[in-house]
Amino acid sequence: MRSNMKPILLAALFVGLVPGAVLAQEQDEVEVEEITACTVEVDPAELPAGEAAIHVLATLSENLGPLTGFEAPEESGIVIADPADIPRAEMANEGEEEVAPLPIELGAEANVFTVWLSTEEAVAGAFDVRFTTAEGYCDARINVVTAGETEDDGTEDDGTEHDGTEHDGTEDGGTDN
Image 1: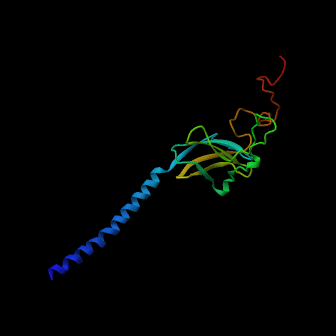
Image 2: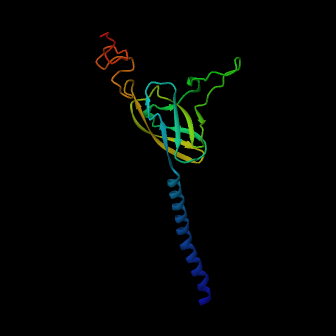
């Protein structure tokens, strides 16, 4: 009877340990995913609302392969720019066909990307966004501001003072004294 118990005890021990080992392995995989998440430094940090294509430099804290996409909350209105709206660089050789730029391109380093975003339908506010990569994702915060809110120098974008008077860039308002 004792020889029959040994295989049963071994089987019970195996059945009891294997699920625990599998669970521990799954927890380790989750921790690895959390550790490999990275952040993105976005330049400029503030984007004006109402623009069809804004050039953004995205620097990932880790090299996780090429960017494959961009995600923003739907209510933010921030999306990847339509390639037709991206300004084209002048060609060096006359007569050559213009090359359409891509909304996401590799920059000077492996973790730096040029991204063209559209804020045509965006609303003002701070939004958590995600840049997806071939090997994971990187998170950033983008601030969308309405016209006239960026880098307040005392004038609106149309060249008028906040009180509505004209401003020509001189300290005395352009008077001859």
